[in-house]
Amino acid sequence: MPVTRGLFSGVLIMLATAALGVGASGQVTLYAAAHEPTVRAVAEAFEKKTGQKVALSIDADSGALAERVLGERGAPRADVVWVRDHAAAARLASEGVLAAHESAALTGWPEAFRDGGRRWYGFALRARVLVFDARQPPNLAPNPEKDTVPAEQMRQLYNPRFSDGAVIMARPWSNAGARNQCAALAAAWDPDGAAAWAYQMRRQQMRLVSTAGTAIASAASGDAFAALADSDEAWVAKADGALIAWAALKFDRFKIDATLEKACGPLLMPAAAARVKGGPDPQRAGALLEFLLSPEAERIIASGPGRCVPMHPSIAHEFPELKMDLTTAASASALADFAQPGLEAFARALPE
Image (tube, rainbow, N blue to C red; front, side):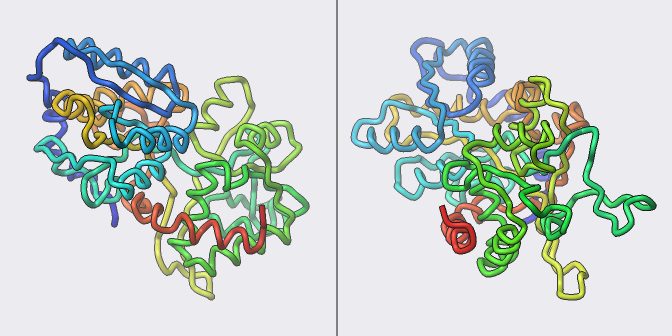
């Protein structure tokens, strides 16, 4: 479902001030699988604003954190979870360990970036991008000496210039962004269309590597012409000195005559936050959850190393370099539904 920024217009101030009436004593426990310095900065801002202590437990991987929460379902220790990959939250919701959370502050949260039962909410978006050497941006014009056609569509990777291992990406079985890419292709083009894309990439000898960092480094060094990765990974690599640029790729569906059939991109993947069902302190959990989704927290996250795309219009205006079109973004919940069909379609052409 398309995202309408106007849905936020009546809730921004409420989000910034919501649920601050709980007592200052005690603490709330947050399990997080996201960039540690950013998580700590957000937790400190919450503590300063509310006087409530946050007990942090930070994991490197969203899937591992989900396993931990599932292992504690009989006696939950976490009040709130924050995962970089929303698919982990979707799994926890399907397993029945997340509590629905509704409040006036979250009434207008876009449907494309939340669970239908309001058991998790997406935020801190990252885009699926094509990363390349900043000194040699891809030009896909038939006559590149005369014209310039930038890369902006996944379908443009059907191109002889991307042959002989020119494109590189992390294996989707071990990388969240690559998995979401497979899911988005299956959702936008159906699983057969996703498989056709993967077969074409096999014919062009696309390379699969262990991590997105490895793929980006290959593009930066010239070993590969371009890498498929997530925008937060690209921002971190650039901050570390990589001479790279990137373009967000759309997943638009086209007819056989190359006319647009349906706008489906860019792929924007949210982090997700949720309350744990039966957690130690539901009241403080609600206060922390709503703070994570507030403009104040999103400003901190957008300023962090991963430069995640803000959802709130008031914050998006502060970061014009992160501007993305949310109106045709794929539904995060739909991506979760297509995760397995997308992986299976990819594996038909490029088995693990």
